[in-house]
Length: 339
Image (cartoon, rainbow, N blue to C red; front, side, top):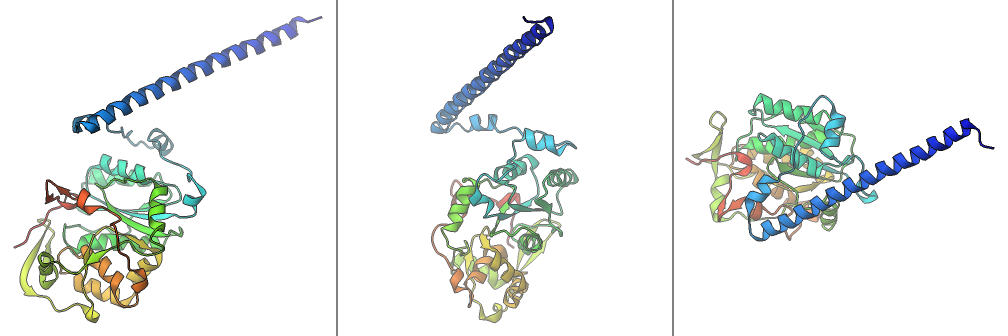
């Protein structure tokens, strides 16, 4: 015999099952609809790419949800990765240097694309950047325990020693951190990755512990950069070339030229900051033009560092990222001038 109290619980249980089934069905329908929309958008993107319709991509940029005092909501809404995606990635943390000065949303998209909880990030904000930009970056950084602002900011001038010094400031901070990162990669705020974190690690590992900073002897057009004394004009944000000849490099070092953007081992980074030859080359480079394009690669090739030399493809394809219609683009939004 079934009592009324038992009947009540039976109907209650049946009701819960029906309600749960209804909720699940609605959830499945919603997921199917979202998936269908994503497939449709992907097909449109492929067609736009084939027809080189740039407007499509500008109209469908990923939305950046504005930051509030609630970091948890910001991280969730912007789909940040909060756990390592593989054991391999967890065991190979990377350090990033991000040198930025404008366009917060562009910077946030870059940061979101390269962010992994096992990595560590140093953000250098140009001392000349607007207060609003600085505040926005600072608010973002506060949400991530493995991300921080550089302890010392520089007023960055394109082509000047200040750009190189910004990277060095972050390198010093990164070495002082508790994260035992394997390589450091420097980027500017207008960069964007073409590989996943795991693919980047595989690419780096293929160099078998060597620095990724290939270079060549100075081509004719680059010789004046280190032949004459240059002066930073911070007020007008430019570098001016004088007619004063520079003395030869210290320690009889041969100068090489390469990319300003590199991937360097932790050991080599320590060498840069502690070796006297590196210190003396930095002092000598302070009045050269675009020293970040000769400093890394030259140190990589000095006596005693032969084991770190590499050849082959550039880690960062500068011929693609810095040129348009056959003419060099301005690096990271700055400007240059020779007189």
